[in-house]
Length: 200
Image (cartoon, rainbow, N blue to C red; front, side, top):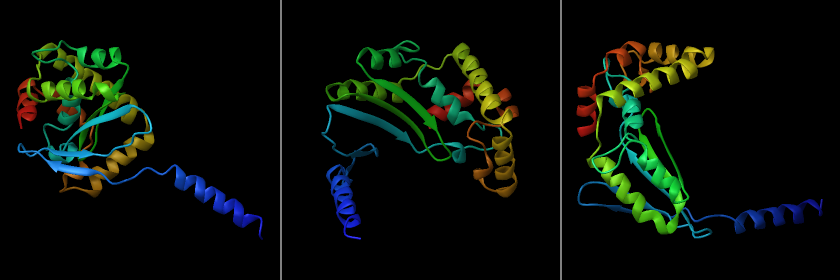
């Protein structure tokens, strides 16, 4: 009995030594953007994230999947940067980046050296306001999303069953809409729809 107590105490002590403060500072900018900063100075690295309050529950029949398509298009260039250059700049500066779309949010993030944070903020601000939506890139990305849908949902019985369950269980709620979109909506999606969605 006495031997188990010291092991537990030591384990607890080690866990306590590695805990990171969960106190985050929040600020609201004049433009309505909420900024949340949590400092963790164990390494000279920063994770920079921009979260938009838009996902599949923001959509409606006819444009399902549009948030996910826009997520893809956000890597396709701005007036200042060509398609793919955003990720190239992140990689050239020793970082990595990605994005995801969920039912309620779309998030873009980079993990990079802390002294490159300002550059990441500039890149995100650029694509936030100056995204170049090209017809050919749009058509290509819709095909990419359709293939993603095929591999993640249509070729996965469990995912397909879950999608049908949500569509049946939430008949009058946007929760029934799949993040990836319905195939018929993806087929009919137009660049003008995406432009309107981006500008909202």
